[in-house]
Amino acid sequence: MSIAPWRSHLASALKKNRNQPHSRYFQLATVRSDGTAANRTVVFRGFLEDTDKLKIITDARSEKITEINNQSWGEICWYFTNTREQFRIVGKITIIDANHHESELQKARESTWQELSDNARIQFVWAHPGKPRANPEAFSPPQPDANKPLDNFCLLLFEPVKVDHLRLRGEPQNRTFYMRDEAGVWDVSEVNP
Amino acid sequence: MSIAPWRSHLASALKKNRNQPHSRYFQLATVRSDGTAANRTVVFRGFLEDTDKLKIITDARSEKITEINNQSWGEICWYFTNTREQFRIVGKITIIDANHHESELQKARESTWQELSDNARIQFVWAHPGKPRANPEAFSPPQPDANKPLDNFCLLLFEPVKVDHLRLRGEPQNRTFYMRDEAGVWDVSEVNP
Image (tube, rainbow over all chains, first blue to last red; front, side, top):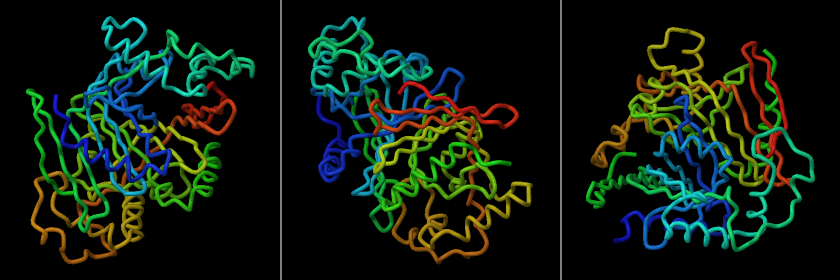
């Protein structure tokens, strides 16, 4: 598979904004079972090797999982504060949980777990997210095994089909659409901001 | 109406992050007519006087309008980079367009237009957003009247019913839910991050 044409622009944004840790955070919108929108900040964990699929991690106890099981299409909004540019990315999300059958993807789930910091890993043994606040002891469990992912650790793979790249710095601003067809070929067009 | 209990926390975040112009941007998620999520960065234009309704502006030609007409509930995700805190705000969106019948809200639409910069106002006379890129002349029209809003200028009022405030800096992190009941009373609860 060849790399999508928007990838070089995203790589450039990540490079030019790398002095800001928040440049690796983006907002992921999904749809709740009642048909309303949900939106939260998540951390970009890189691309799945040799693909254009973005890696995100989440807890199986998170509401995201229910939402994605119900509607697997989502939209990422990624705003880079230094360079003042935005990527809106429409894509389909696949959940790689402890029971996922593909061994290649289980390997990816495992390596993503191994690459996490201790601080990120320990959150998967904390008390149930969103439930009434637990005692302090519930937040100081023993550190989990750094090699073997906990059962509630999920890898999400976000596969883009449309990218809307807006650069606010132009006069006027510049905006490019990238659209992937059924054959996996990307069409590129300049549009009005 | 009394001011909601999350307002002081939001005001404090705005104050502590005010050296960053992007602290007044947030991501607004809506739902497309095909039931998938949409997400984009918009600018916070303050609260509608004496209410907890957030003001956002948009062009009547924008896809947001179709989406909100179809599903008026949305979610704001507002991440403050200095203080490392996030507000997720669920609410109902009302579109105040040129034909809206309430004169009080037309006044709010008018004053929001008047408070815009020339740069923000001129974008409403630019070529149709998202259409194939127009000639440069389409982006240098005469400056519109600063007093009277153009017909395609819309004010959006976002009325919160639930706020999820996450502060990443705690050890462990702190998270508070605010929920408004039918009578307009806010319930506050501490939950697990």
